[in-house]
Image (cartoon, rainbow, N blue to C red; front, top):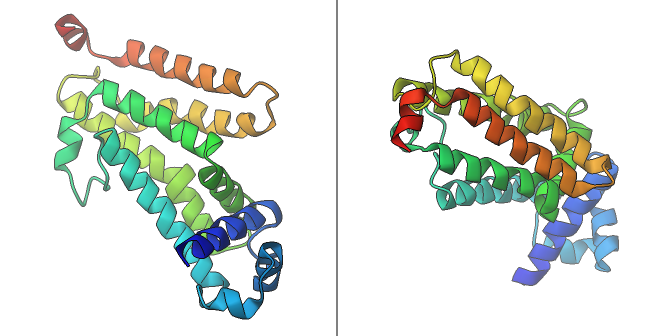
Amino acid sequence: MSDTKENILHTALRLFARDGYEAVSVSAIAGELGMTKGALYKHYKNKRDIFDSIVERIYQMDYERAREFEVPEEVFEKAPLPYHNTSVDKINAFIKAQFRFWTEDEFGCNFRKMITLEQYRNPDMADLYQKCLAGGPVDYMEDLFHEMIEQGILSKSNPKQLALEFYAPYYLLLSIYDVSPDKEEAANLFAAHIERFMQKNIAKMSKDKE
């Protein structure tokens, strides 16, 4: 039963990414799996239930990556303390893992494509797109950079501007990755961007400690 639920989840997301959430019916999902709608309803109540499970899975995976790389799991307002203890190396490793997830992981890549397709048609999708791929990550980086500036790790600067400078190439390279014939080049460009950004903005006193 667990395997069937997983198959439904992954198949539905793949269809949502290809055709758009609104265009895909429960009948289409069931047909792709070679099962009846009645059999599918034994696992999920309706299409919205499948969608909610997909979103829950994405958030769970995001929390797990944050925990793995020892960066804050919650927004600053909910849990400010972890933002005081995040190093440059941890941020570098985490953001590279995020890039790989959204570009190479099948679940992450299909989720990104789905919300990109649907953001202009569905308010819920637009909200998800902002939280996962646009305003949300910028706010997260702004809070991290603010604390790192306060601790003297980064040079004095406007944390919002730093967050925009850091995230803009990431956002652009996610889009380039999908159509690039050389996938590795996009990942290498992003890694080089992170290195240059940190070299430019790490405070002199922090460099002297290394």
